Length: 232
Image (tube, rainbow, N blue to C red; front, side):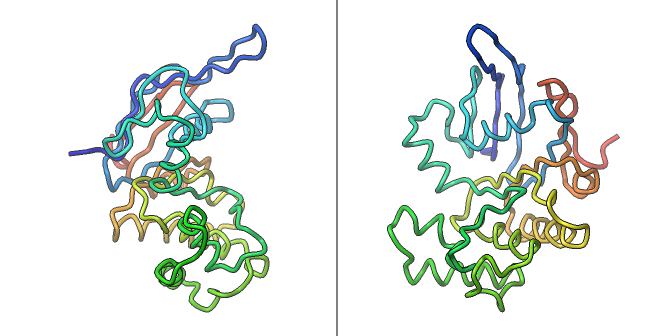
């Protein structure tokens, strides 16, 4: 079966003049399609760097990265951007919505931007996604009028717009109160279970990790643990 993610020997070295800092030291990781995986680690452990490499925002110094059967670490910058837009979804700690756009326009943006505009089909899908995340009464509201939890639900709908192979979430509940965070996590679990969507969630929150199906821990640039939640 084709896996959602295969990482082999991923290393990352940052250079500043003659000084080198090795952040990732050879990470091997497989994620099957439909997994809801939590990536944990202290500040400086390398988890944000690894997430950026998986999201094709950084290139690894060494190693191979395959997403849904396609080798992606060697792609040109143009093809990386195309792959990122069409086949990856992103949810960030700070939602990064476009403030002058409505909720619907923000959700449609990943499909509309390369097409040069929002088609009738894009508009319909964006509206359907917003209804699914419980924002049917906020579809035409400007992003600036939404609460923090509502903005994050818009961000999840946006991440689903292009039916991505992998959804990458970087501290998606880190800027929310507990009640709003629980609603966002419930939504991600629902999408995971009903659609089989694959999530890689970077988090400091043990409560988030406990509700995922797999738990990954990075320590000093190495994958220190990798097991299904509930495994001894």
